[in-house]
Image (cartoon, rainbow, N blue to C red; front, top):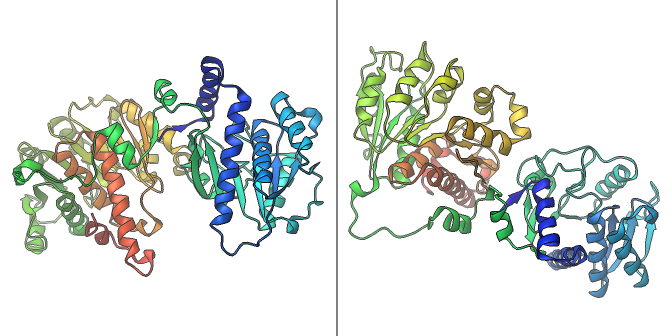
Length: 513
């Protein structure tokens, strides 16, 4: 499923109108009908609702308002009473909206120009927000702002047309004020702001409805942002979730992962990473760690091979040679580096030796990312020929990109894409709606997972899963996208069997992979 910016949506609209010859009024008709259908479905899904429905359409002066008027017509035809409150005088309407206004008036749909603090909100059972579409910018002002505040304060369920008014369609930022919708009907394609927080929260449930613009237009137009679904995994990444393994396969068929992780203070990070890699399907896993830790971990995970590296007896990586890690990596199919590793003097140069010397796919997480962020000469490091995956959380991404965490969260898609392209890496920006960006500029947004996964160790599990998939022969793009989707789905399954998802542990995810 494609995700578009407001400018991309405008181009697709123009293409449908000018190239194919689809009239703008036809697209508006299809959009309004789709909204009316979803409102009726919403009503049917609310058994506690009153028998008599009366909805209020809030209509702006643009095409979004026209969509709302079409929805009003179809709701009236379905026997649902509906009124229209205009935020502007009809004298200011464009041609298409003026046409819809005249049509609605001839059909006897009650309408009026809104005046602050005059609406009888308790007379209605629901609201359709058709005030501001993707073409608006900046914070709502004047009557628009007043209408939004009153609608939010009414306590009525709000169905937003395309995007909630006041939401930045490209970044998910919320202007003040912004509609708090129970349901948003995205028209033709998802908008970026609907799949990024805080926009995803204020949009409520989001459904996407076609309006006549062929989906292939998005591919032909070079739209490179997609929502991760099973269909996308199959059609864009040639993956089949849950596919059976060949009967004659063996452990060598599914690769050997090397995990360099853990210290005396954070050995659990390595243990979680190793267990997750095996649960994700690799045939073999070797856990490289400071030698003095090995006696304490023997038998903790019988299926993993332990490789103790000389550490001067202190249980950390400060004395471990990069050459020791590279020697182990020679015969492995993927290397994951960083979980629970800690920091020490000159560790950025130690990491550079791994970066340049490892010939297998490389995943960097946690402390390895901080080493990378602190490398003053990272811009001069050569691009790796083998696949490279970085898995930062927002704080680590901020350090890598020399930004603030707030900057990162304001434009997760854009920042992840730019960094991946500039450095030739596949980047997994973790968090709610994890973003995966490829060196070619393709971005995937994941929706599996839940807030119960906001717990120490879940990132270590994700590193193990992606490294395992790399070792099994997947490309960096396939492993990162499928790994993120599968990791989140495991969290959702784990949450289903607990009385509260707040009690989830990272190890629960591993048992549900």
